[in-house]
Length: 335
Ligand code: HSE
Image (cartoon, rainbow, N blue to C red):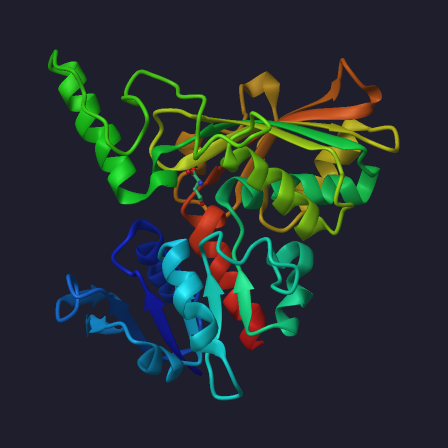
């Protein structure tokens, strides 16, 4: 079994990584939690490993671990990740930030798709939540029907901005319902009873960085061409922690919806929820807290005819979108 470290375990993603490690029975001999001066010395209660004292992060201590999960900012990861894993005695590092995702030499991994890549590097990048959730359905359909292009529209929960995002939504909703004006510092505008068609910074091409992440990461993880057409519109909505996505794929082969349902039903990490007669379809309320991404509303595309499929997914942003994927990568790396 392995000595495992988490950097940023007090944040929303770090907390879920710790819980996934406990629930999934990752072979942990010792769990170490590293934090900033603010949290060092505090005690973190865990179900399986008792109370753990948060240690002040330093590279030498992190290198003593076999596996280190980074659930911190991209700047922190850029500064320390390579130093933690350098050399034969360095740790294996799984980074949840976007710092290394687009570097050609660093694997970007969704274990069900390109898990083998974990053997190529001691530093692995964990994808953006929106990409990881969407690909659980897109990948099995690409394998079955081929794909010419993908168009995605997202409905993203407050948790994408971490615990402060969830707090801002919940506190703001309370203020709004009591007749006040919600404040906002995390989101560009108040999120309660609103939708915001901007996540992350605008790029020169008019897309936001969140939207471009879906394009870049889908290509890299699925091994598609550098100019493979993937287009995303990313929108923040006032749900707590499950992202939803409308996905439209133009396929190379004609789509049979029954076959598509079967492929998805058998795909790892997917829960098919697709029965219009019983009003069964994916929703954040049912996807929250679940490892599997819900997929439903499958239908042939009126735009692409037989050569297209449209569907809806909901997945827990903190689990498949972040912590669960990271822990699955870790399992793959130590297997
Ligand atoms: N960028 C995502 C969001 C979270 O804001 O919803 C990233 O994993």
